[in-house]
Structures are given as structure tokens and as C-alpha cells.
Amino acid sequence: MIPKILTKLKSGFKRFNSVKKYINDATINSTVDSDNGSGFKAFFGSIRFKLLASLVSMIVLMLLIFGINVFVESVNNKINGKMQNEMNLLSLTEDVHFNIINTDDTGSWYLLSRNFEYYTKYQLSIRNVNDLLKELEKYPNLSKNDLESIESFKNEWTAYQTEKKETLELFRKGQVEEARVKYTEVPTSTLLDKFIPIIEKVNANIVKYEKEMEQNKKKGKLLTMSALVISIIAAVFIQLVLGFLIVRPIILIGSQLKEISEGEGDLTKQIEFKSSGEIKTLVISFNKMLENLRILIKEISSSTDQVAASANQLSASAEQSTMATEHISSMVGQVSVGSEQQVQSINDGVMALNDFTSTVDLISSLTEEVSTHVIKTSEDAESGGQTLGKVSSQMDSINVTVTSLSEIIKGLGDRSKEIENITKAITDISSQTNLLSLNAAIEAARAGEHGRGFAVVADEVRKLADQSAKSAKQITNLVKTIQQETFQAVATMQNTIKEVENGLITVNEASKSFKAINQSIEGVVGQIQQVSSAVINITEGTKQLVTTIEPVKDIAQDTSFGMQEVSSSTEEQLATMQEISLSSNALAVLADDLQKSIGKFKF
Image (cartoon, rainbow, N blue to C red):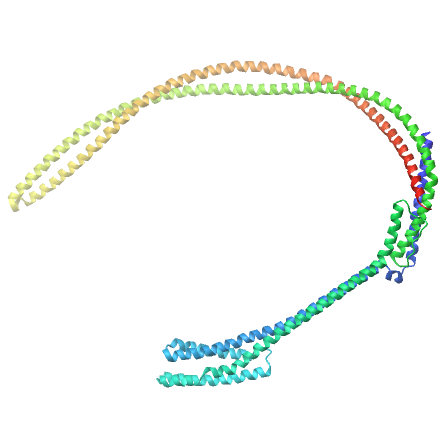
């Protein structure tokens, strides 16, 4: 029963696909037909041309605004260059004016103060004026009148220099008062009055250029604003035209599509709009689509009843198959659960044995390490005992050496006492010798000239006696120091002997302790070796047990996997049948809804 229903559904879908293909072919043919009539006429009527024309118009207007700005900027730059040239010329003329005034001032101060430094400044100002006038003559872009004015002023300046030079010659000749009077008779203001017109003309040119630049800026702003207003008006006009030519047919198509989407459209209604290009193609394609849609709805309406009946039969068959599949799935699920529990139990046992084996292996490795460390400790203890024996022998030798050294130091103390006695005797002898030399000196003094040589000898003897007394005193001090240090050394040696004896006792006790430790370690080594052999036996037993359980675990896993696959297959079949049942019910509902929806259209 189900195969027959599926066959009917497939035939219905094939019919639907054929109708859909028909619609697509019709749409493509309409587009091709519209394109066949294209050419220059179609291009000029297309949306692409309209948008391109709009874009080109805006670009032209923007280029116009840009050209106006560039032109205004170019004119301003030229005027600015001229004004900068006049500013430099003004600076040059002002420098000439300043140096002329400075020439008059420094010359006056020179005549009043007779300070030659002012004369040097005077000469420097004259050179500056001459250099500036030469530079002024070579300045570019000067008119003929300007050059004539400069040449006239230069002649006046030469005459001014000559008169001032004659005045200074009188001053150097000693005619001071006459020179001062004559210097004032040649006023600088007269010369400056002839130079001021040049400066005023330069200032007038600067003011003129500033006004021209300002007027040019105003004209540029006016032209820019005019072009901007024209651009805005043109843009608005172009957008309105494009809106009428492009948007209106789209609005008509959109309104009819809205009626169709709401389920109450008139499929017999056609759009009529005279246009060309893409809009014409769009209108033709839309009208063709309505025609194809009307044909499609007729085909769907005739097939909907058959689809609904087939869907009801398919739903009944799917429900019967679903009940049988659910029973099989429940049985397979119970078996699968039992298999999974069995596999889980075996896995838990294998994991426990593996953990136990790992623990035993760890114990075995630890016992081996402990045995190695204990043997090493025993060897170290034995070596330590031998070392303590050597230390004990060495301490005995040190005790003997320190005792001998103590006796030697005591003998040194006795010898120092003998040296002290000898130094006392030397001191006494030097005192007596000193007295004898004093007596000899007294006798030599009594003898007069005959005893002078004897007096010299007596004086030398007295000096030797003094030196002997001093040396004996130093020896006595050294001997006392040696005696003190000897007593301290003897006391230190006695303390050292006591410490050495205590060290011998401690070393002997440590040697006994090392022997006892060595005996205990030997007993521990034997016990650890017994534990290690027992652990090895346990490890081999657990490995055999794991090897025995592995095949059982594999069989249980294979059984569980097989039952899971069977359960999955039955569940998939059950889900498929349920989906078929739901799909058939939904298909029946959709067929009814589709029939109702189609009934709303007029075709």
C-alpha cells in the first residue's frame, strides 16, 4: 500500500517541477525577447544610462565648483606674490630710511663727543645705505618711474655725503665749532622728504593688492555659492526625474505583489507602463510571471485532492508500522541494557585489577629503591666507622704533639726568666760604667789640657753606657712580653689538651654508634629482599588474572555493541515511521490549506 502512495506523491512532485521549469523558461524567454530589441536606443532608455547621466552631471557640477576655486586660488596666489614682492621692497626701503637717520645721529654724536666709535658707526651706516641702494636698483619688477625716482634720490644722497664729508674734514682739522654749525646746515630731513614718496608708493601698492585680493575672494565665494545652488537644484531635478522613470513602475509592481502575498491577488490583471530598458524588461517579465503563476495554480488545484487522499492512506499505514516497531524496540532496549551492565561490571573488574597491578608494581619498584638506598647507607656507615677510627688515631697524635708543645713553651718561659736576669746584670754594669765615665770626666777637667783626650774617651764611654742601658731596658720589655705570651700559650695548650681528650671520647662513642647502625641495616636489607620477592609473585598472579579476563570482556563488548546497533536500527526505523506519519498528516493539512489558499486567487 505504501509504495503505491509514494509513487503517486512522486508523480505529483514531478508535475510540480515541470510546471516550475515552464515558468523559469518563460521568464528567460521574455528577458531574451526584450534584449533582442536592445541597442543604442535600449541603452539610452536603461536605468544604467539614467544613473550614469545623473552621476556624470553631478561630477561636471563638482568639477565646475572645483575649477572656480582653482581659478580664484590661482588669481589670489598671483596677487599674493605681487604683494609679497612689495612687502620685501617696503622692508628694503625702510632699511634705507633707518640707516640714513642712523648716519645723521652717529655723525652728530661724533662731533659732540669726539668718540671715534661713533665715527666708525657713521661709516658703517653710509656703507649700508650704499649697499641697500644698489640692491634697490637691481630689485625686479620695478617700473621706469620707480627707477628714475631711485636714481634721483641716489644723486641727492651722493651730494649729502659730500657735504657731510667736508664737514667732518673741518672737524679733523680742528675747526670744531665751524664743523658743528655746518653739519646742522645740511639737514637730513630734506633728504628723507625726497625718499618718503618711494616708501609711500610701495605702501599704496600693498594696500591696492590687499583690496584686489579681498575683492577676488568675494567674487570666488559668490561664484562658488552660485555653482553650489545650481548643483543642488540640478541634483533635486535629476532625482525627481529618476524617481518618476524608475520608482513608479516598481511601486505598481510592488502593490500587486503585496496583493498576491496577502492571498487576494488578481492574476488576470496586467501592468501597463510605457518605458524602455530594464523597466520595460521588468514589466514584461512580471506580466509573464503572473501568467505562469496562474497556470501553476490551476495545476496545483487539480493535484491537491489526489495528494490529500494519498496522504491519509500513508498516515494509516505508517501508524501500524510504528506500533510494531515500538514493540521490537522495547525488547531490544531491555537486552541492550543488560549487555551494557555486564560489560560495565567486567570493565570495573579489569580496571580494579589494573589498578592493583599498578600498585603492586609501584610497591616492587619502591622496595627495590629502598633496598638500594639501605645497602648504600650500610656502606656509608661502614665507611664512616673507618673514618672515625682514623680520626681517633689522629686525635691521639694531636694530643701527644700538643703535650710536647706545652712542655717546650714552658721551657721557653724558663729561658726568658734567665734572659731577664742577664739584662738586669747588663743594666747594673752600664750604670756603674756611667758613674766611672762621670768620675773620669771630672778628673780630666781637673787635669786641664793634659786630660782633654781622656775626657773625650770618658764621654764616649758614657754614651756607650747609656746605649747599653737603653738596649737592656728594651730587652727587658721584650722579655716581659714574651713571658706574658708564653703564659697565655701554656694556658691555651692546657685547654687544647682537655678539648682533644673530650674529642677522643666523642669519636669513640660515635664509632660504637656506627657499628650498631651497620648491624641494624644488615637486618633490614634481608627483610626488604623477602618483601620484594613476595611482591614479584603477587604481580605475576595479577597479570595472569587480567589476561584471563580480557577475552571475556571482549566478548561482552561485542555483544553490547551488536545490541546497540540493533537498538539504533529499530529506533531509526521507528523515527522514520513516525516522521512518515507526521509528514503524511502534515501533507494532508497542507493540501487542505493549499486548496483554501488557491481559492482566494482569481484565475
